[in-house]
Image 1 (cartoon, one colour):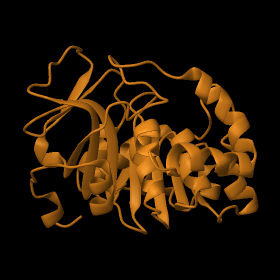
Image 2: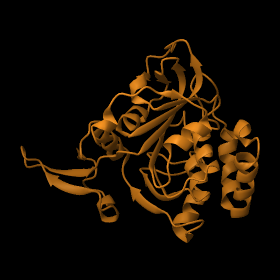
Image 3: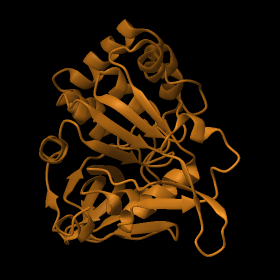
Image 4: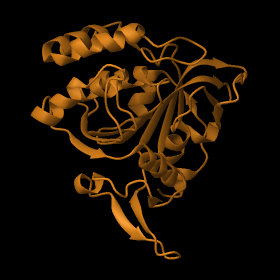
Length: 285
């Protein structure tokens, strides 16, 4: 990352369509993070609507939104540490892309959760790689050439090294932003902070823009305005996942997705109705 990429910036308050059109480009490496809740579904749907292509999608836990983006042909590569429909089973659009190349072949780069967290932190710190013990004794190095072994220059210990994650753009969903552009993430905090700090460009969709952040939970992170390029007010932007303090998880939809996504035509029909059709922005994000 160049020095210019790290200069403080003032975020712009934009519509979702404007933010995606401005900051997400064909061929980008895109990280969309959020652990169990605050998953940026609305932003992912806008990426699909705008027909972005050749993306490298990065996410520790790709679930339904990445299944949809892969099934609509947005991705050429996936960097991840676990993939599935939480509590239900497989991601059928992801499997179809990997096993049969539909709608296009998908390259995989698999890591551990610890590895990806360290890689984001290394990217946020401007380091070229992350060093950890976590891969030793696993078979991941056999299928992932980006897992290497190094020797500690001080102790001689054998350690694992992986490249830093430095996305072109990070997209997160959060509860609130204040009018100065500071963003509050409350509840279960994943790697949103690290992803934003590691990325060259960053978008936050939020449930609301308020006069102040109204911190209510000790388990929270505030992303200062200078870490973000764009803020989008998008109520319900994490549905069908949940947003702590705003709405619950739509468990029935996660179960229903298994049947919808198994069949290509059923999947495409659902996407046409709920994401691509006129008015879908207000119904599905």
